[in-house]
Image 1 (cartoon, rainbow, N blue to C red):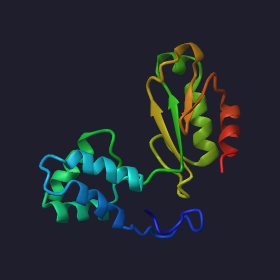
Image 2: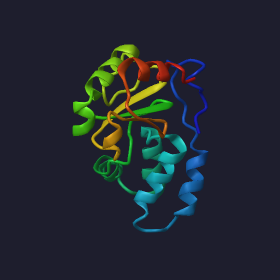
Image 3: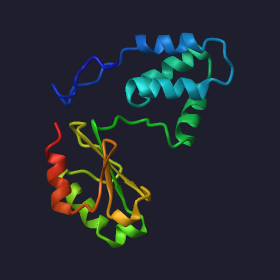
Length: 165
């Protein structure tokens, strides 16, 4: 996976170990129409689709790089940028919005110097805005690393996030 640990030096260049990709490509060798499963597995291994990984997939499969980028940018499941260790999803759907989600989004942004859709420079947090978590009766809602937080309040959610490693 990654050779450099961003916790050691968050500003160090990341080195991508392509040996994990070789196993994925061997599994799908000769299979036409396997671009999406290859990209899905590569993203699972690397956390996103780094340029080096897409270039290696292109070389090995002889699928033009532009086509790989086309697929990766068309489907929302794929990420071309590295994300934080902690994914914060704050709902800003109607119920959450009226019950104070914008104030929590603003508080998180100020506390960690992060814009919605962005990742902190140390790759600790990624802040995403979603428009329905499906629990409107518990609004406002957030999901942090797949853990649901109901009835969030700006100061309390920031305190919870600060407790993460």
